[in-house]
Image 1: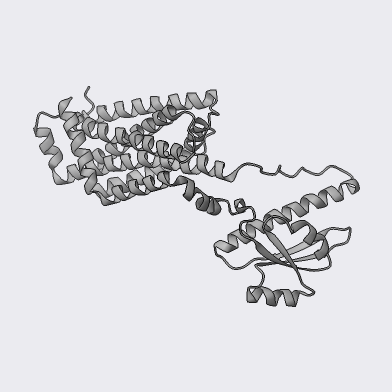
Image 2: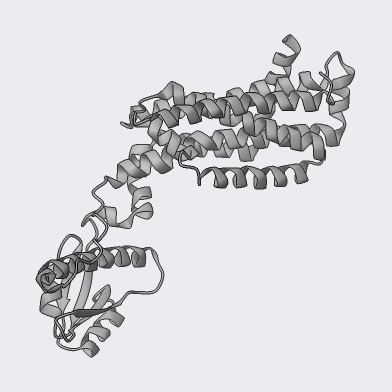
Length: 346
């Protein structure tokens, strides 16, 4: 066991020379440490409508239904600027006096047809389109209510309005899963890179000449890298809690991260031992890991959903069963790796 610990220390020490890995850790540390500040800007990119009037959008309105539409859309972050003609509105749009245009005309039967014009692609375009979408959705709901008595049959209901807090949603479904699974992904990548590099340089054979088997080498590296992921995440969770983001089941989250890290480390090690070339092993590991995460995202209890449920204390029986299955998969993966490292022998 002592030789494995020595190898684990050697593996952790070598990480300091990997500038890419160190930079990734620093970025994660910065995000976790300053999450309360960063989340505001990140949410504005994730959900531009969450600005809730912090940025006002000037919309030029024309057409014979401009009065009807102005009364509805002039809410939140939209300021209506009426124009007598489309040509004047277009000139104002070209000069940048207004951010978007709405031309509303009343159709036979009382329906309102709205043509929207937004600026070319930019971050402000995303905000403008988001505000216009919200405003026109409100107009649609109002028109449905107004003409409900004229309907001969009940149409399909509109989707319910989303009342969730975008900051809460972003923090627990995007930010927290990112901070939880990125260390596990990095651990698997380092494992694949380290073993493949040892094989390329011939140092792996030198290690095996010492009183160490290939299993011992794999164990030593795995102890360091599997343990590194939950250690990082524990620090991230502490920093998130310090910044006001509470985590309901931190031990369960750490257990999940440990299980995922063990699976990824085992996969990276197996690829490195099978391929023996550093670049090829890294590339294949990246594709396999990303593909696995993509496929897992389609599951009812996807990894990011699992972390979010555990963190907000809304875990169901299926959540705990999925966590148990992940830990079982980790044990099977690592057992399979040790069997593979032993050449099929026990």
